[in-house]
Length: 425
Ligand code: ATP
Ligand code: MG
Image 1: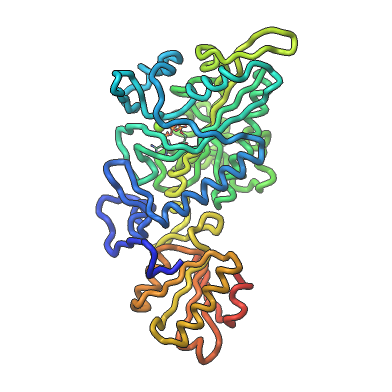
Image 2 (image 1 turned 90 degrees about the vertical axis):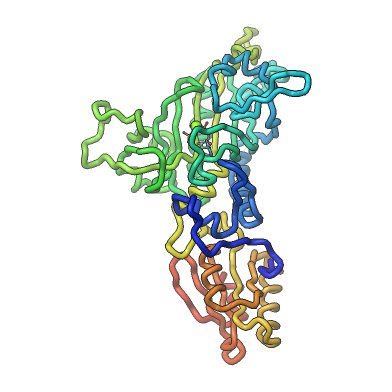
């Protein structure tokens, strides 16, 4: 992509309304624009990251045999009256009336809709286990939308729903998804701590929140220091769920089994949340199947959320410095930023164009700064946008054939021959 032809409306000044780094940086890097409280337009750069996150989430869901669907954002109130949540959900639910005076709502979550679908089509234990998921916009009229996309009113969520015949089978599904969440977040460069959670408004039996440590997190988390020494392979349900970890009210000093020196306290950002809640929705919505011995019983269900749009902010909270964002490669909008310091010089332009085309043919995503701007502006913008690699090319390249390759994360710079830079990346 040529920056001169792209749309990245970066800001020089720090927007006054932004209280935390990720919000400030997303506005300054031209990733999102706020339309009204808690509601955002995703601009090209922000959307690229949002899409990379979605791709990782989908790959990991598909890997464990979940099937992707897409439910509507607008739902009939009727289903929620059946489950008993229409009144219970309160003011967070955006309620709408259509032209025929029928009550509708903008979905804050989708247990009712998916259970209704499964109730119609799944009649036998042979169809189980079944996990359906989607990535869809949700609306919750949060009392205090803040921190940009971290607590929006309209936000993008991956929500999955599991259906099993027995509570043992449902627990196995829960464990499998728990482990796949750890892998999903790891691929985004995040170490998530699964903390015991309150089963709250959804109600139920087993629940974990996935939290990442960040000073600006909204929760306080209390966890066993051993989490930090667990390797990726050790992070199984059986190992991790035996370590103590709890957030906020779930942590009771008198119940905490850990000696003080082993207990860590930090602020956490909740990026995912999973529940096992049995027959809470299958019973009232009639999702029942026949068992091998001919009985008819309600399905055992769980639900599994990932805050897809929140993750964009959360990843930035976990990875930035005073110059800007530092994207992990897996979610970076482009892998490389190519800076031409001599735009207008025919010879340098030719070298830069050549390298740009070469990188593109190698499927390396490159953002080419071909603008006629001062070097300082180019460096500052590239650091702000935070692509993992920067290649700088100028007059010296003509003399020596060398370019400068900078690693955004470490700040390390090396001189490297123009022909070798693609292989190095
Ligand atoms: P929170 O305690 O942060 O309000 P929640 O328990 O209400 O979260 P869930 O209903 O479990 O959240 O939703 C699944 C995931 O969706 C959460 O783990 C979070 O990452 C994300 N999420 C929830 N509310 C918002 C919001 N207002 N803006 C952005 N992401 C959100
Ligand atoms: Mg909430």
